[in-house]
Image (cartoon, rainbow, N blue to C red):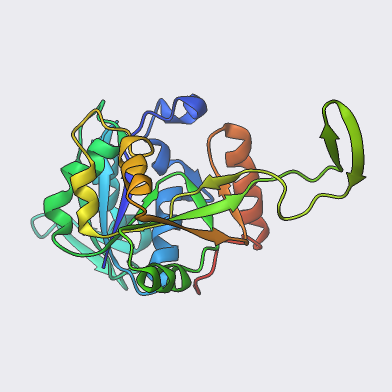
Length: 258
């Protein structure tokens, strides 16, 4: 099963770094957040990826082209027609297709553009700027169990303060927060049947609007609730938070073995 990752946006809210590289290529530790996401899927046996590139798409292509050189010891033998020898290659057994889905294409349009690479099969889809310890196997099992076109992973972003219950301006109760407080948000880690492509009109289609609305109207969208760790990387502060966790050796999303 193929994993589609959206990696084409401008990343304007973290422009301190995205002015130099695509947002999914911003490093946590010494590896791009895109690599962290792929490592999670790979740990569950999903090793074929389609990257929906756009802004600075050449950066992503060059990074994967040089991945073996970056992660392995290498000898450059200039005495033998510039021969390059890679010692004990440390790359993962991935198949990565990087597609230029356009500079200004919306999220839905990017997905529509990679239809031919997915083919007529179930596929996974996620954003290239967030990590979590989502159980991919449980997510897929849930998707298969309900028989609908789509499944989105949702997460309670909640809050950790006391909760006031108010009716017509009158405080009726004060209590500690519960799992029911806060809003459930779409965190990516989605699964779709190929029929989903028919819900996307073209380049100007926003994934989270008309396509999702169409699925909801047809009773074809289900939610998988994730109760573990999840964090997006929208700002420099969030990037630094993720990097601190990674450098501590206790990153919750690191579910793979070295």
